[in-house]
Length: 126
Length: 360
Image 1: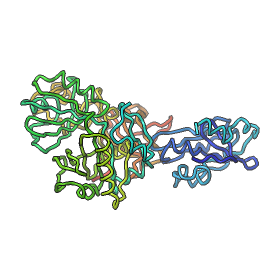
Image 2: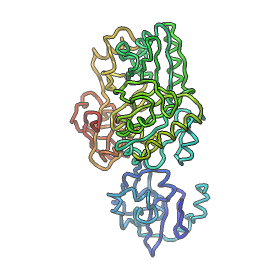
Image 3: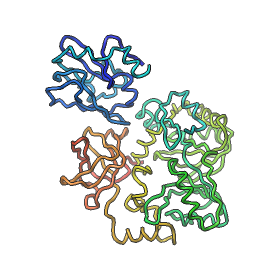
Image 4: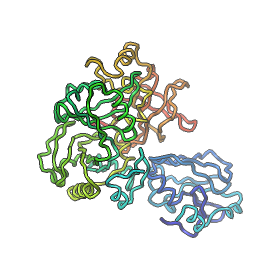
């Protein structure tokens, strides 16, 4: 299982990668393994004012459904359209082509409360 | 927690293991969808050793089976299998099961893993025929080999001509191991179930020989998750989801195995009454169109009113559309009707369709 050092993690198994004010968000390798085959992703694109920890949508996998909790406050600026036809990218490439949404962050300081890869690995017992 | 004789193999294969009916069972090995498709397109192998095997012996074995099950056991002959169910006196379902007629005085009843103890007690309570009842569930391993190439795989390692008809069985050797080999399964595909005794060494010998023989067909191990989606595409019941003690076989669409005219059996009087009064609800198949995932327990609505609940649901790996079963009020149960199921407050429309979802 792979947990890159250059991104931040949440206790709910999301990751966020930051470029300027834009945070790219997905779920971790551990999360995709626990979920199993992802069949679709449902993002609530009408939500404009997202608070840290809000659900921005759901991931439906064969076994179960799971919320995607935002690791930051802000607004959704882009949704990964590729996932509409290839949801399995969340399983096969969770940190790159399997990204889920991009959020324009309103309070980048929030990122300090997130986990680094070492802390995340210890959380999941790896 | 119990482990099957094939546990070490599942671990070695890196299967995701979960507790099911007191056993640690493989839920998936690689991808549920890939495992599902391997059964539909070629051949897959399941360890279902957690299932229960109860033997009925005695002069009145057939009378006992006839009394305790709803299907007509007098239609059976040695080497024939029958799908059946057991009912309580109030017509609620104790379990669904397979009935194997071995000889006039010997039957094998194959029951659901989660119900073994309950079923065995129920059988003993109702044994007014002096038959001998033996629960040999812990002695038997059960491996299912399912898919269009299953015959070709097993024929290579079977000591007999494997020309079994659907729901027939015989004793044969597979991989030099003596077993009951039956053409049955829970997938809707051509397939076989292998019942055999012995320790881990024996079970692993059978498993490895099957995989060796199946190599040219890209044979795959298949977990319980794909077993569930495979059976659901065929509209097969899962006890605990689609049927239980609060449902009766008539509303569950099991009228075809409920032989009310065969003579006395447990539950018959109530079933006759239910039939005379007419069904209040019915288990139906539902096919969706949009991206929504029906799951057990979701509410079903029509005209803004609750009309039932989903008992099983998934996205069909073959149809790539939502499929579900559930009980709905009889007034809404006709094929073609549009109803909605509710996911987190959002309604998704589905049409009531004839089962199975995929034709074989």
